[in-house]
Length: 516
Image 1 (cartoon, rainbow, N blue to C red):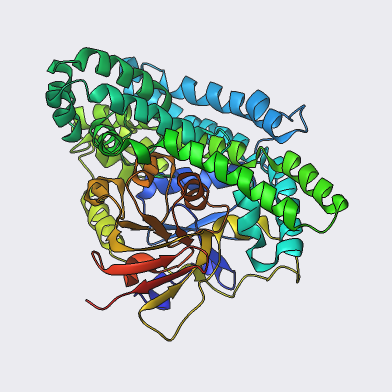
Image 2 (tube, helix red, strand yellow):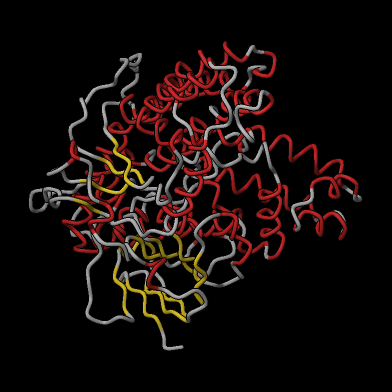
């Protein structure tokens, strides 16, 4: 583990309570750092990067840098689908549909800061409807806590599973592609190896390729995980998507369609049990009212996740186009080197036609590689203020908090997010590049999950994450797939050896590591 000194906050953040950004547990290069800091400013937040890791800091303005068009809707789902999502779509599609290769290099460089601001504005729109769905969901979880005790939040979220959402739709669409991939052994083999050219030439390859294009047009423009501007999208490189979809072909009973049916049945059973356990008609009617008000939470939150990743992916075409022109001129060694520079450095580099490739690029690439070996602390500075006793904190339920420490080195404690017990081998997966190492039934141990990780839920026997609470993406989708899940272990990927035999208790929120 790293020491606190390694992650000493900058002078302007001394004395502040800093929290590692949820859903972004890997360091990113300088251009991605600038992008995310701009995203935070766009809705009134504040981020500080330390060793390439993003920390959320107090002290933002609390209001968008550029006021957004107010939503005419009070209903959370309408506020998202009929207003905020439309703005996101318009901005993102406008960014990724430009013919940047035809632009003069000076025009591209001048437009880049404005495009970063536009993507930030789209991201701010994803935050606009948040309280419309968080507030009723918080009321439901508070009610469940009062009536059902400490397990109330998990019970409350079980009552909300099985509803349509973008992450589930992504999985269902990938499952349909997987069925097309089984048209011939040659096609399935090529898909499993991520070889699109060979897949297109195989029997059934033409129909499969056409369906893949349709899928990528909807789900392929976003970043693979939040904020990683420097990583290729699936539209650029579909090989990873191909390898992931082959997972669904292995066991259809673990695919999204079958899992969705189970999730709906479990939700209905949980509602019936809760109503039976409540003492009177008044409480039952209150539960029904709260459920109706909170029923759109998962749909809106997962829709936001999809479009937040699109906000990142929408900036890649213009960045790569400028990088290609700088590389052709000899100012950069390769187009992707652009991500190691800052906006003002790119403006200066573009203006100076005689400038050679900056030595800073190689130094920063090495720096990023070194940062990637560090274990970033979840919190820096003084601890954050605790919520009032008895209060439900939706943000804490989404992002989690410090894990409970134990004196037993073989026991980790987190948050029980989806019930069930599994004993299996742990597979530590830090990025989707390693996803195919996960074997059926193994425990997926990872920093976090994102919508693009959906195929792994069809393979895993259980899920363990470093960060998150019962409202996190991993928790929501684990319940959808009926997988035991423990989130918020804080150091699960560091403390659980790859391949170790572990026992997961998704109700107690524990991970037991067995001796080798």
